Image 1 (cartoon, rainbow, N blue to C red):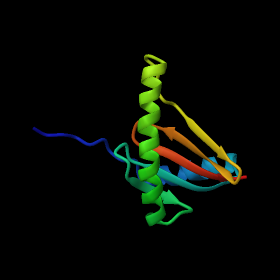
Image 2: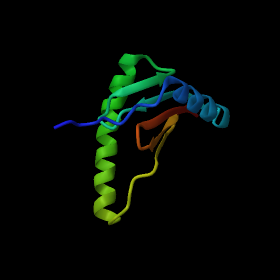
Image 3: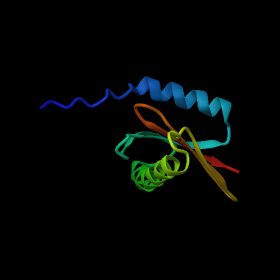
Image 4: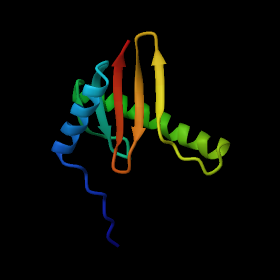
Length: 106
């Protein structure tokens, strides 16, 4: 049996996305592109080690959030998560090929 992994976007795609979101949202200081399996694909503004830590934590949050949506909003699908703290925020936007995460400062 042969399983095909979805093709990951090229580096230029990541760079264009980062440029677009940082132009639109100047409070963003880091961005992560996480695989659907929870591994960092590409990062900007954080070390790979920190990206791995964040990816693991957020994968758990995203999985639990999807479960809640399925149970509470029958047929609903996760589109966006935003977490705000007193020192900044986290925005999570699942895409088909990856999960886009941005970290913001207040």
